[in-house]
Each structure stands twice: as C-alpha cells, then as structure tokens.
Image (cartoon, rainbow, N blue to C red; front, side):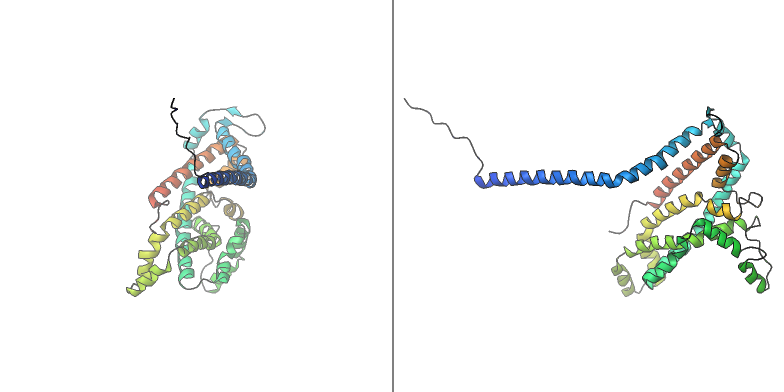
Amino acid sequence: MTIASSSPPSRLPLGDAAGAGTKSRTQRARSRDNQGDGRLAAVFLAPALLGFLVFLLWPTLRGVYLSFTDFNLLTPEKWVGLDNYARMVNDPIFWDSLRVTVEYVVLNIGVQTVAALAIAVLLQRLTQSAVLRGVVLTPYLMSNVVAGIVWLWILDTQLGIGNEIISGLGFDRIPFLADETWAIPTIALINVWRHVGYTALLLFAGLMAIPNDMYEAAKVDGASEWRMFWRITMPLLRPVLAVVLIMTVIGSFQVFDTVAVTTSGGPADATNVLQFYIYGAAFGRFQFGYASAMSVALLVVLSAITVLQYRLTRAGQTDLG
C-alpha cells in the first residue's frame, strides 16, 4: 500500500521570520513612544485648555445667554428673548458708536500697515541689526494705559510739550484730544505709534522667508528697488500680510484702553467707540443683558470681517513655490 505524501506546511525563511519579529517589536516600541508623547503633550496642553475653557469659552457662552435676558446683577436674570437686539437696532447711540469705531479702524489700520510695511522693508533691505529691531519694538512694551497717559500729557492744550513746540513755531495750539475733529485721528495715531513696531517685526519675519536669490536675479535683470517691491516682495509677502491685517483689524475694533484714559468717550461722544459704549452700559448703567447683546453683535461683525478678509486676501495660499 502506497501512502500519498503530503507537502509540508510552508514556513518563512529564518531570516524573514527574524525580520518580522524585529519589525513587530519596533512597531510596539514606537506605539509606546507615541502614547508617552501623547500623555506628555496632554500634560503641557492642559493649563492652556483649562484657561481657554474657563476664561474664553464659558464667558462667551454665558454672554450669549445673557444677551437674551434682562440682568442687572441685583436680581436674577429674566428671559426677554430678542428684546435686547430689537433695542440695539433702534439705538442711535449704538450705530454712532459703530461709525466712530469704523472711522478709527480705517485710520489706524491704514497708517499702521503702510508704516509697518515701510519699516519692515527697510530692515530687510538695509540692515538686519537686532539692536535696531529692539528699538523698533520698544513702544509695544508699554501698556495701552501708560501710552495713553503719556500722550495725554504731551498733547495737553495748555501744558503739553507738543503744543509748546507748536506754539513756539508760531502756530496756534491744537486741542488734539479735546476737539471733535482731532480726537479720533489722534487716538488712532497714538495706537499706531505703540503697535507699529510689533506689526513691522511680524512683516519682517515674513520678508525673511523670501529667498534672496530672487532679488539678486532681479538686480541682474536691471530691476529697480521699487519694481522688486511690487513684483517680488508684495506677491510673496501676501499670506503673512493677510494674517497680520486680520489680527490688527480684530484688535482695532476692540479699542478701549486709550479712549478710557484720554477722552472717556468725549468730546460730545466723538470718541465713544463701541467697546467703550458696551462698558458703559454694563458697568455704568448695569444693563448687562443689553451690553451682552452688543458684544454678541460685535462678535458676529468681527467673524464676518475675518472670513471676508481671509477669502479676499487668499491668506491660506502662497505664491512662493
């Protein structure tokens, strides 16, 4: 009787088996390392996440809820639905405050962006001294309140050194912060002085990412500095400039400190910006529900402006290949 021989079960070569075992151990080690990195990252992120939840997300949600209530701190909040929003739409002071705020934003952003871009380009093309960059950033190290008080003293109509110089040159003294025409431009320029160095350094960082070879090739082709600025610098700086514009516009709409310490919304509500009006409604007249409604409206406006800016400036795209 003949017994049919069956083929033996297939086995991996010894070298392949050893390699598979080594690979499996490596994958397990990597998995353990990734888990350890994830735990470490969670530990470091926990304080920031806790701060975000406690100081940003919860107050935002609480403010949205209060915008639908009548709340004055002395009695429990009373649900009033859309009454606060209806009041806001029919409030002429709200719309005037929004107009004043937009006027301030246009002046502040226009002057600040042009000045910061000029400073950044000069730093890139002429000198990259760290000392000079520190000097440019110095005003930003001063708080808004301190900057406002200093300029309030400098521009005082009677005793300010600024008006003393103007008077010494034979001109009439200018009531920079006491005149309806001069007040908002003056506040805008004070904040330009404080923030322009920081904005310039953000743009300078973007300029440093542009390869110097492009400028050298353009010089060989006979391009002038002005032509290189428009043909090379501006197109390649666009994503950074777009992000900086979004940040500065959001910050400008929230101007408060400088107004509070210089004009307190005057003269004749000429500087009654929206944030100052919201503050007055909440902590001056204890109308927290109405103040919350205006805050929510400001949040919606800023969100819409941010989305529009992001799309129009193509902030998420770059021309640098």
